[in-house]
Amino acid sequence: MGKLAEYDPLVVGSIPLAIDVPGSDLDIICKYDNKEGFIADLSEKFSKQESFNIYSSRIYGNPTVTADFVLEKVPFQIFGQEIPTKMQMGFRHLLIEQKILLDKDENFKAQIIALKKSGLKTEPAFCRLLGFAGNPYLEILKLET
Image (cartoon, rainbow, N blue to C red; front, side, top):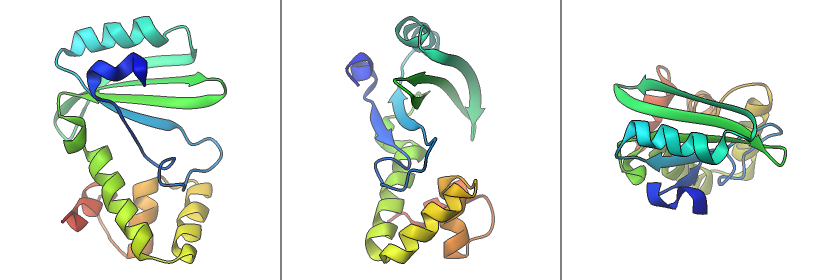
């Protein structure tokens, strides 16, 4: 995380929730001010890592940079936007899912893990168990308080 300190990095996703499965990546979200500078910095710091790939996209209208690589057999995904990290969807999902897991029993958590092992991503797994239809990445945000 030290290499990313200037980007206010936060670890999100299944690993901090202890619902990761074999092959789960370590998701790190970042906030950048300069997209091209962020791309150059990530490339300089991580391009020598196994399976390094970096690309730009738009997610829900927001310019986004994603870098994937493997370090010491652990898959990483670094995700950057111009949005402060604590306002990004990944962090908001983490807080909501953490609360759900605290409110539910261990059986619920086991079912999430089983769905993830079957190939579902985290948010679709939560939405399936909660009976939500529609886009799981947006539906889960409706539980925000």
